[in-house]
Image 1 (tube, rainbow, N blue to C red):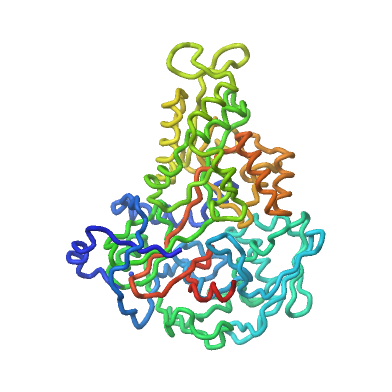
Image 2: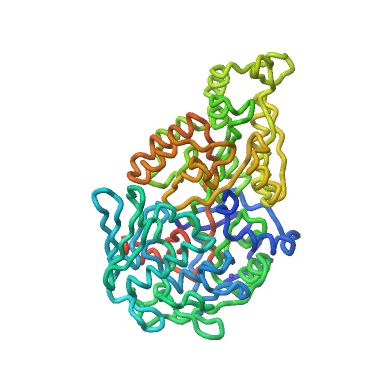
Amino acid sequence: MKRRISFVLALALMLTMLGGCSISLERLTSFFTRESQETAQDDSQSQETPPEEMASETVLTETQAPEVLCLPYQKDYGLNPYTCTSFTNRAIFSLLYEPLYAMDSQYIAQPVLAADTAISEDGLTTTITLRQGVKFHSGASLTAEDVVYSYTLARDSSYYDGRFRHFTSVAAQGTDTLIIQTDTSYESVALLLDFPIVRSGSGEAAVPDGTGAYRYQNGDVLTAFQQWWGGESPLGYERVELTSCTTATDIRDKFEYGTVNLVYTDPNSTAYATFHNESDYELWSCPTTVMQYVGFNTNSDVFSHSAIRAAVTFAIDRETIVAKDLGGFAEATSLPAPPNSPYYDAGLAADFDLDLSAFWALMEEAQVEDYTEDGLLDVYVDGYPETVGGTMIVSAGSAQRVETANRIAAALNDLGMEITVQALDEEEYRNALRYGNFDLYYGEVRLSPTYDLGIFFREGGDAAYGDLSNSTTFNLCAAMLENSGNAYDLCKRVMEQGYFCPVLYKTYALYATRGSVQSLSPALDWVIRPATTAAAES
């Protein structure tokens, strides 16, 4: 959804800024961690807290669009969608490459290069029919073999790693049909097919052959692709220029001085630089599958009690966390699914919102009270009272996650627990998770677009920390993949047993110089997506 920014100081900012006008847990987390770490030192002096109020609906004035759209480009990372680790460059991919399906802001798969999908009665076979008349920038026609080739690139890449775990085969049938076999009944395979399609054999190129509305030209220029199946250029520009940038601060400054017009960013990354001059830009919120949550060590003396684990959800003020710690760039959630998704049940979610009476009811159920009369809650372990608390670990690489972990710990401590937050460097953090050296942890995980929670409950799963693997719950994960209607049972069990405690889903941001682009409808990863195109596809 498009959100426009307007603040009381807009006029003052416009007068003073003369140039400002038309700019597996952590392994699955953010594919761009390396870039953030590399630029963090350069940007450390410019870090500011993002605004708590992300956007308003006020439109100031109409602004004439520039003749050429300019995008920031981190040239050292290149434009290969399967090897590039630059978050910034992914906006450019939206113009060069297209997926079979795009996941929209409602977390629903919308067809792009796919024309039709059919699922067998047993749910094990998905048949995709390709859109006719699609050409690559080289002039070659799109075929099912190109899709199979792109699938192998996606399967072997870091960014898409893990999402195809249930795929047993992907094969072409003729020139325009794709057959996907899975080892479990799968209702929504289409959600997993949002990876870029490139021409077979071009995957090693610096800029693989794509089907997007724009094609790359030497000199870091994109020109409208005249044979694009969608017709006229969706952005209204015949030419898009790529402006070389380095750090996040460099990108922000070039945006504010009009050198670039459109910026895609994670407002809560380590390298983020706050955007000023709010009156001169428009802002779109972009969906993600990145969930932050509180996890538990089920072997802990204290958190082996399911009632104590389950009680934590009722002590967390998620809305305050989103507003204060993430500047509004997130969606608070009491369930392990985004609120706008088909997997989310608002009625069930309300049962696990902030509710101190529910917290104390579970404490009573676990026979927790202040037995030692020291002002702290206790639970009996092997016949002796033990303080309800422990160490919550968090990655020191994310200032936001450290801040949120401390906020949650403070809330629990105010209720009589004794939680100590320990921020560890990335390697120490991963090792502590791997070897169970924690009582709680604050984590972040990038789930697949189908929100498959199997990584938490499968034996050896990438997020099955604290001995969380559980065959009963894993079977519920499979049932949800078969039918999204089964998400209710899975979410209910996760929350009632306190296996982990969802807090929020992050959102990314797309900043545009006011008037530079018309209404956009960002999809997951395919962010520069005109609303008219989205409406036509749906």
